[in-house]
Image 1 (cartoon, rainbow, N blue to C red):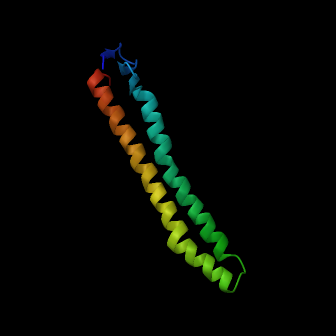
Image 2 (tube, rainbow, N blue to C red):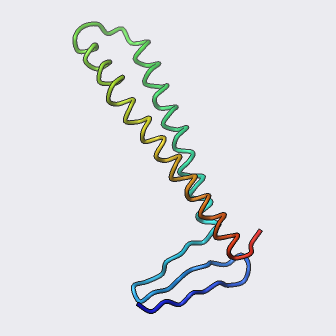
Image 3 (tube, rainbow, N blue to C red):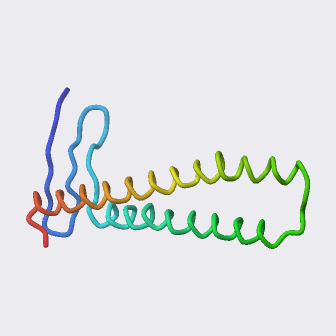
Length: 108
């Protein structure tokens, strides 16, 4: 595999081109992506709060409600919580990688 490393002037992309394409990232875009991903956690937490509130204020009794509440508490809410954590972790990873790219490139 042929590899050509490129590092342009400050503020430009650092990338690695191979015969298969580019490998690398623009640190500013990676930071933006990191913030976008991390914000999804709070959006998911807000969604959970909305459903909890709607469920609490709904006059609904019987086995269907009990079944839904059990699914909500044990499956849906848990899955959403894990999804929020995954978005947050991915966002933090993007920020860490962007900071490392900036360090390697000598950018502030």
